[in-house]
Amino acid sequence: MAANDSALDLEEMARARALLSPAPAKERMWPVLAAAALAAVSALAFATAMIMAPPVVSEHVVAGKTVR
Image 1 (cartoon, rainbow, N blue to C red):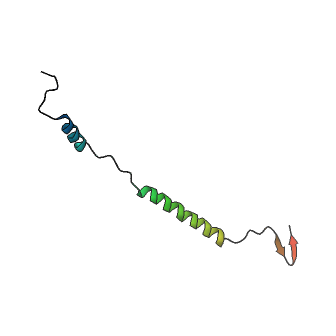
Image 2 (cartoon, helix red, strand yellow; image 1 turned 135 degrees about the horizontal axis):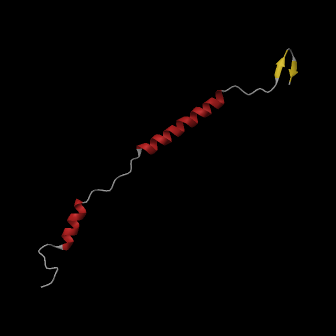
Image 3 (cartoon, one colour; image 1 turned 45 degrees about the vertical axis):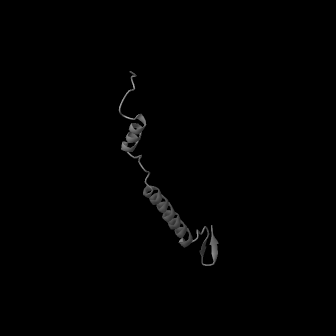
């Protein structure tokens, strides 16, 4: 009598184990989308600030004279 004599089919047991094993964890997308949205909003805020900011003036004009 062989050692593997069993009423259970080994292929079916392997299939049952595979069906009962926990599903692999899926990666979440919302943290990635939130980080991309934050980067986009801050880039737009910095661009708006650069456009709206007054120009840097290095010369001061006092009564028609240039002071350095």
